[in-house]
Amino acid sequence: MASNIFLAITITFMYAAPLILTALGGVVSERSGVINIGLEGMMVMGAFTGAAVGYYTANPWLGFLAAGLAGGALALLHAVASVTFKANQTISGVALNFIGQGLALFLCRLFFEGATMSKTVPNPMPKLFGFLGLPQVDGILAQLNVDMTFIIAVLLTVVIWFVMYRTKWGLRLRAVGEHPAAADTLGVNVYAVRYAAVFISGILAGFGGAAQSLAVVSLFTPTVISGQGFIAMAAVIFGKWTPHGAMLACLIFAFAQALVVLLGGGAVQISPQLLSMLPYVLTILVLVLFVGKAVSPKADGVPYEKGAR
Image (cartoon, rainbow, N blue to C red; front, side, top):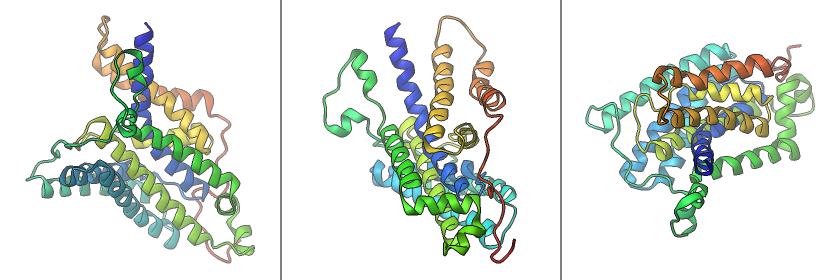
């Protein structure tokens, strides 16, 4: 019984890392007033780039960093459309989801001999004990050997919380998301803050995709990112647009995925189709039952035009 509990916790942490990283990106972007529905497409680009660079360099850390840059590059397109040209942010984000998926498949065919699936990464992201140079252990202690991507996700949650609530730039970020005109009159460059926030959100979403392709499955496939970006967006809302709240929500959703794994291999036979629905059903239930009074930043989704009232 105890081993099953620890196994569930380990699986939860493994699946939570991509969600947490991506949700943090959503928090940063939306607190600046820019809705980023394109997180899913940025995750896909991050997943492909991480797997491709990780395969050709045999260095997962280079793949992880490259994935962040790929996600950031895609996010810049969203920033240009939604901040500079004041396009509808929802439509821009949806378009980026298609662009990210299509571009990743095109590049995969280009770099992997026409295949839509990459080759297996020779060196996946290390786990905690391996990163610290500790010997492998068996039993319950082995369940503490979590992926380094989860450790990175937790550390980034702390960093983003500190920056958002304890630094001048974080105050400007929140001010731009609540009342950009007032922030502008105080000398804050609204466009620069929003560009930076959207770019950071893309980097974090790219990290989330790489956490999936370099730590969870060790390769890229067309379905390696399958709804995680949208679950991360739900986590942003459930977490009430705070880094720590989004992280908690991601842990809940990841636990649902862990239950799918554990129940799928259990003695009681449950339909795989029903099990695969569990994380998404839980997402809907959480949003309906617990997020009725969540209030988004006042300027979220509203393009800012200098001089307009």
